[in-house]
Amino acid sequence: MKVGVVVFPGSNCDHDAYHVVKHVCGGEARFVWHKDASLAGLDAVILPGGFSYGDYLRTGGIARFSPVMKSVVEFADKGGPVIGICNGFQILQEAGLLPGAMLRNRTTKFLSQPVHVRIERNDSVLTDGVQVGQVLTMPIAHGDGNFYLPDAELDRLEGEGQVVFRYTTRDGRLEDAANPNGSARAIAGVCNAARNVVGLMPHPERASEAELGSLDGRQLFAALARVLQAA
Amino acid sequence: MKARVYVTLKKSVFDPQGKTIHDALRSMGYSSVSDVRQGKFFEVSLEGVTAEAGQKVVEEVAHKVLANPVIESYRVEVEA
Image (cartoon, rainbow over all chains, first blue to last red; front, side, top):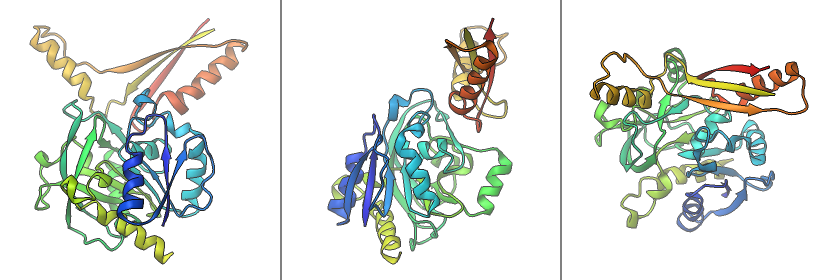
C-alpha cells in the first residue's frame, strides 16, 4: 500500500502514522505537505493527529481550507480511502467529508489515557474483516472529542450503519463511565455513506507495537492494507 | 468599515465551558445567575467595499469559516 500522510502546520502524529505504515506494516509511506495539492500515485490518505493551526478558531476549522483538502475531497469522492485520526477526524468533519462536530470534552479537561472501543461495523476501509463486537484498547489525547449531532441525525447515522467505533468497557459494555468525553451515543469513530472515509478519535498508530503497550491498532492498518490489496 | 460577528453554540448544544463558569459563579455566591453560555466574538475590518458589499462578505465569512453550522449560530452587526 502507498499511503500519503498529510502534514499540516501543527500536526504531531504524522511521523507515528508514517512509521507504522512503513516500518510496522511494510507499506510505502510518503509525507504530503498541506500546500502540496498532488495526491498522485497514492492508494490511501491519512490525516494525522495533532493541533493543526494551533486549534485556533475551532479544531480543524482552518486546516480544512488548506490547498491539499480540495484534492482530499476529490480523492474521497472517487472512492479513495481517507483516514482521519483525532485532529484528522476533526478536519474531515469541518470539510464535510464526515458527519458531526466535536464539542469540548464534557469534563472540559484535555484527556490523555487509554480507552476501550468496540468495533461496530466491519464494512469500512479501516475495519474490513475485523470482528464486530471486538474491543480494542488504544490511547486518546484530545480536548475536543465530544461527538455531537442532533438526535434525528444520530438516528439516521445509526440507521445507515455509519457508527464504526464506540467507547465501551474493556468487555464491550456501554457504560457512561466508559465514555471519556461525553460523546453522543458513545461514538468514537464514524464513516461516510460510501465507507471509504473513516474518522476516529483514538490513536491506532500509538497502539501498533508491543513496546507501546497495545497491538490492537495494528488490526486497523492491516484492514486498510487488505482493502487496498483487493482493490 | 467594521463588522462584529457573534458566534454562539446552538441552544440544543451542551456547553461544558459555560457550565463550568456557571458552577464557579454559583460557588462564589452569585445565586441569581441562572445560566452562562460561552461564545466567540470577532471584529472584522474591511476596506475598499461599499457597506452593502461588505455586509455580504462578512455574512459569507461567518457562515463559511467563523461558525460551524452543525453546532453554532452567528449574528453579524455592521458599523455604519
